[in-house]
Length: 344
Ligand SMILES: C=CC1=C(C)c2cc3[nH]c(cc4nc(cc5[nH]c(cc1n2)c(C)c5CCC(=O)O)C(CCC(=O)O)=C4C)c(C)c3C=C
Ligand SMILES: [Fe+2]
Ligand SMILES: [Fe+2]
Image 1 (cartoon, helix red, strand yellow):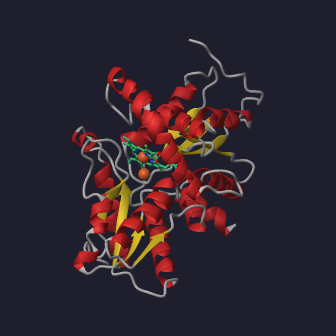
Image 2 (cartoon, rainbow, N blue to C red; image 1 turned 180 degrees about the vertical axis):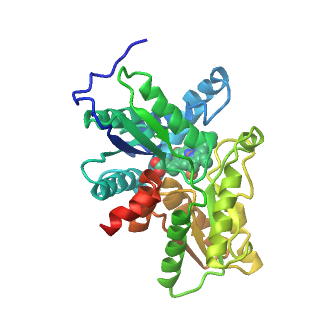
Image 3 (tube, rainbow, N blue to C red; image 1 turned 90 degrees about the horizontal axis):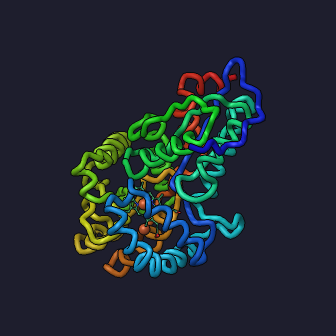
């Protein structure tokens, strides 16, 4: 086994020093075919995401999927690309969350960010924290609801990075936070603020979560239960019923059955029931990304309007809002300590 990490130049801290690492899914470096292909190839080769045996899946992936999908996805990324930063929204928001957390936590508590797929890698983020003298790391996968396809693979990647280290930091991995009070607070505020900014009133607020193959749930992934937990808590806060805020699942990939109801057919069927003005909230995504801005903001809007809908408004994800940073700070350093810091 090779120990590849360059020796850390930082002295071993006598009192111990904690670094804070947030991780999201990952995103391509550009909208061109090659960048998107590289990203999708890494993502869709993860056996936590596609469980089919590589001998069967890899020829399909490297053949038909990676020949056709990167161009289509590249066009979608181009529609939502942040031109000022020359980066995808997911990268821009994740970096900004880390920068804002850095300001909150101060120099003694270093913050880093990493992506499960692509750049910056979780391994680089660990190195940077160790080079700042950290001998312990608190790790937060930025997924409010647990899934093996997201939370677990982020943890896998962290531990894979540690496998290369001679001097290993102590690790605390944080759990998903489907009904954390600050998360529900932040969602509640974002709904109220968004509705107040409209000149019309949605007849329904459709909650759309990223989907998951049904087979994952049958094998024990409890992601849909976590999504339900989030939505129960949010409905309660907003005093709305299940009919006023239904749950749906978006972003199907491949031919297999996914968790239902599917967002697109659900929303397209609303106009014939007399529901033509809707808001869509996507509480499974901490940050706006291709799945929220393009799949919902562009594709779903188009099919809703074609089906006779009149208005569809997106409630933005929490992104790098103060409420989002309050939440991340509380998750990372504990709500007790976070409260003390703010009152200083
Ligand atoms: C089998 C395939 C997929 C599973 C399982 C899956 C689970 C899953 N994903 C997220 C969050 C995100 N997914 C994003 C993009 C995305 N997801 C898949 C496939 C699966 N996801 C694909 C092929 C893509 C790429 C999009 C495309 O090519 O059009 C993103 C956005 C990334 C970005 O750069 O903006 C997020 C975020 C969750 C939460 C989840 C399981 C619960
Ligand atoms: Fe996904
Ligand atoms: Fe999608």
